Length: 259
Image (tube, rainbow, N blue to C red; front, side, top):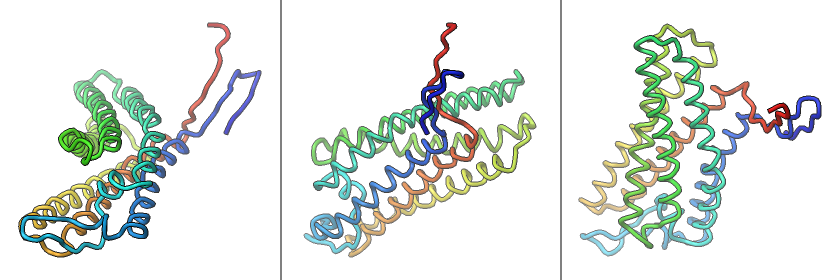
């Protein structure tokens, strides 16, 4: 919503939950469209995998890297949605840091510890975004080692960020006896459950990837791909809980003529 107000000197006012929703919808929608396009336009090319024991292994689902980084126009679509969603993500990261700085401001020992963790969470969130941009714009076909570096960095920072956020909002608020509203309790519950799902899908993806390379069975790499997609979906939903945490927050461009 755009507002022009001479009285309050507000030129732009956008609901922050809407910003979060757009940041979540762009990569999730982009990923689904890329997967569908691969299945419809280049099914065999996008699902073909090769391992030591066989020249061709049958699969039913493209991996995320194949769907978003190797084929056109999917790779261009993916890069556009990642670029569009990236910048607001830094605002969300800093928004959480500011929120936690207020919550843990009483000067007690637990508050000092969790304020430091809030800084770590902000750094991890920013690292996750930068790594996602890197692995999206540099495909494995262009530079495998650099793509691998960005992928590992993204995976580690995303997982660590989810864990630290759960610790801050679940354990930190209890440590300082901070009263959580019903919406805040819902947010914490969703974060913990989505983090648990993320770990389950991550473990399953690692298992299927190992099994594919070890035994070279039909369909196993697609099970890895499915777990990869579900893991990413859990991560996006985790970030989507910011819509609850900032439910009454606006992003405002305002003039202060007295300054």
